[in-house]
Image (cartoon, rainbow, N blue to C red; front, side, top):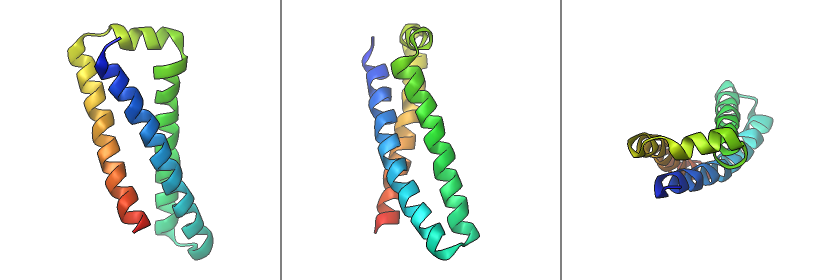
Length: 100
């Protein structure tokens, strides 16, 4: 196991936590306002949460894919991790602006 796979795993877990908080706020906003923007944000958050949940399953629980992720070349691991970390940074900013 390389450090890049571990970094990706941490990023996925952080993404799930951030998305849960965003879905909570956007769901509450939609319940109050019934606006199409709030619904769009809520659906965006739900689908991104599902995508990260599937990644969590692949990186942590599913044996075949977990072994595959750990055995791909380091450059591929770095690329997959870079995408996860970029998503985490974007979600951190979005969470900060939403809760502000």
